[in-house]
Image (tube, rainbow, N blue to C red; front, side, top):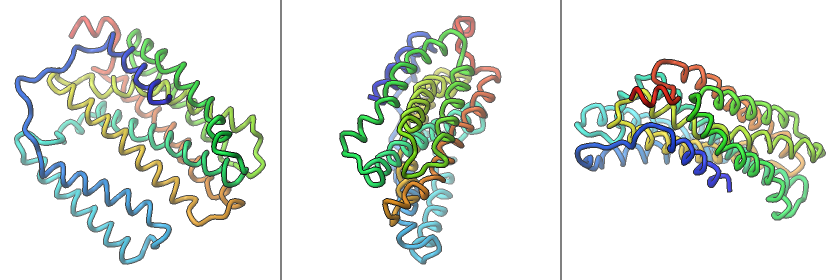
Length: 295
């Protein structure tokens, strides 16, 4: 349902956004880049998941850090020398684009941490059934569903800044509501926090995609959108790995306290969207009607 809301917001934005990206011919397959990037992401996520079990300074963890560093350096070296790279690293020199990618990662880290920590807390600590725990997330899904198309219309009319500010504010407040989570936290507070995070998520997707794509040549718009989508998937993987690492090997009574750093991180993800909103004010980040006509 949350994913559906994201699709609605993007469709709403596309109806008013820049023209479709087209290139003269299809790009060649960058197999070395794909292998190295997959290696980096797999090792980073794997270390985050297994770190609490094997120890953050264990030989296996240190080997993982070294492997990730070497693979990252190799990826940068390969991509900077290929005529048609998997990921054009020069795009990251643009603050607008870099900010949007950071925002995409942050939003999905916050969302997936919320979903996993919520599930573990409600079922293991509160003793709720899976059905009841799922029902508790309905405010999050409703908030995202209602605000996603609204965000797309706002971006089309006035640009990405306002919905980004709203997204950052709602996610930050929602995370802060649960920073002092206990086994007996009010259900009303839980539902309110989930609703706030859902509203923030609904407002976030269209302006982040808009910010990434705008300010780039039309032929790069598709690449920018693809990198932003990849950043979302990376954020989802990181959010799940971080949430699992925080509460692994904890008893049900300790889980609420152990999850508190996770809620601080969710709030921090919201704060990062204020940075993206600030970056989106720079030249080339607006998608109002006037700027569309100019392009």
